[in-house]
Each structure stands twice: as structure tokens, then as C-alpha cells.
Amino acid sequence: MLRRDYFLKMIEEAGYVLARLLGLRQEGRYQEALELVNDIYKDLFPFDPDLVHHTKPEDLPDLLRNEYNLTEEHLAILADLLRAEADLWYDRGVWEKATLCLQRSLALIQYLDDAHPEEYSFDRIQKLAEITEKLKDALPPDSHT
Image (cartoon, rainbow, N blue to C red; front, side, top):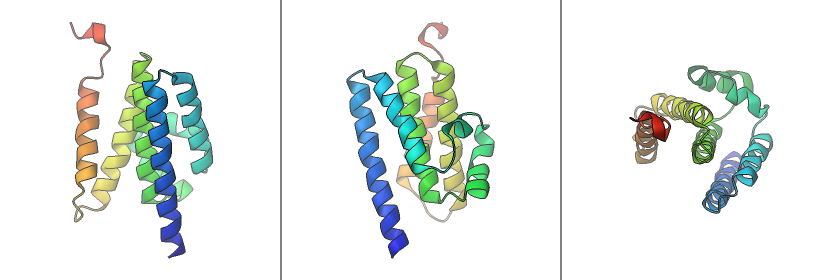
């Protein structure tokens, strides 16, 4: 019961923070939003944020599960955080960082989906589709010609 309460509180806090990130993004306060992302990494996860940004997307889920004992709930929150961070980088025109964040998010969500094939999740399927579509369109605006 205590563990469940902890995870519910963590998910609730993550939702609040993601909403705050969206607000900062809509206001064009990108530097503040990126600083908040960095703070979230440090507050919620037992590793340096650079670890996430320097690990190959396909290696990230196993590394986080095996080396840092992250729960599936942690992985889901991290995937959402990476998606939000990608949006900030796209808005600033930093295509490579944005694309890498999306690739890492996709790897985490795909890992979670593969871990429970018996559980159909509309939310996960929607996120997978959205990220896949964004990655298809992940070229800078002037390179579509």
C-alpha cells in the first residue's frame, strides 16, 4: 500500500511538472523550462541527467532497469519528460537534441509496451504513434525541399 501511494504521488507530481513545462513553453520561456527539466532529472532520478543524453536509445531501458533499478513508473515518467524536452528543443531549432530525446522516449515507451503485451494501453499506443510521426517529420523546416 505504501509503495502504491508513493507511485501515485510521484505520478501526480510529474503531471503537475509537465503541465508547468507546457505553460513555460507556451510563454516562450525556454531557458526556464530547460532548467526545470534539469531539476526534475536531479530530483526524480538517481543518476546524472547526462547519462540519459549520452546513452544510445536502444540501450537506455535495460541500463536504467538493471543498473539503477528504475521501476516501470519511473521509466514512463522519464519517457514523458524526454518528450517534453524534445518539444522545447524543437521550438528552439535544436533538431539533433530534439530528435535524440524523442528516440530515447520512444525506446522507453516501446520497452514498457513490450514488457506487458497482454495489457493494451491506449495511452502508450497513442504516445508511440505520436513520437513515430514526429520522428518522421523531424527534419528542420528548410530541409523538406
